[in-house]
Length: 367
Image (cartoon, rainbow, N blue to C red; front, top):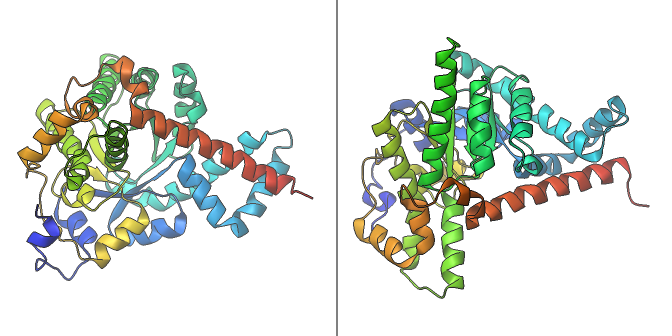
């Protein structure tokens, strides 16, 4: 199996590969972190967006506790009756607004399509569509360039339609499969169509649907190991890419007013195989540095299919891949119980709990 880097190692340019792709193709780079220092450097690489979620927020605050400790204490003093969770989420809001401010010039330049900062709804609300919508509307009001992350579960799909109708740009998250991507796009179309029917504006939205390709790869490896299924190890690295490419093709064919977003990087294919597409790639900052340091060529490969024998092997041997890759692989009622969904929701919930614990340690240090 030949990787793009092996095919075109000589295809170097004077510009870093990420910047080359950002400036010469429709592919948009977003930074998978709201850390202001990382975001500023990522913008120099060509980034035109960024994201925040409970794991990212926890990492950013923990890594910069010298800055955040006094800010957390100030939030607590300003809100003397706030719970640990409420203080933590106010810190997430502050972090998100600060990052959004860095992106506002790009937002204005791109007419709202890029320059967005994604802020995630509280994962503890994942069973309550109405609560997700209300929080999405509130987050959307924090800055003009906020885009709100809602999980692509049955409950989340309901919330995505209603939040879209209420004027919120959406970033569907906790999403790994073609079936989820289609359900998200259809929900956004329903919300936009409701706005059209009432002569409400629909031209300022910048909605995207994330497919967490690396987390899909992780889940397929885990499920295959549990079932004692052995296939060529390298094939697993193409599963998320295959789902991303298929979802992208369907979106283009159907004219959805939503873009695909590639996230949860585990290898550079989740960028290099998508270059040239009118979509978003959102690598963690360290992955951006590695792609540039290794001079991975910015060669247009969105139209190059994953080798058919790889897809056929994955499809024949792994039932979980069929759920992820087939257009009708899962009904919406099953989204929440897909293995990657459960794993990711649990991780987000655990990050929420860890942020609560961090706030507790700041406000009431152990004796």
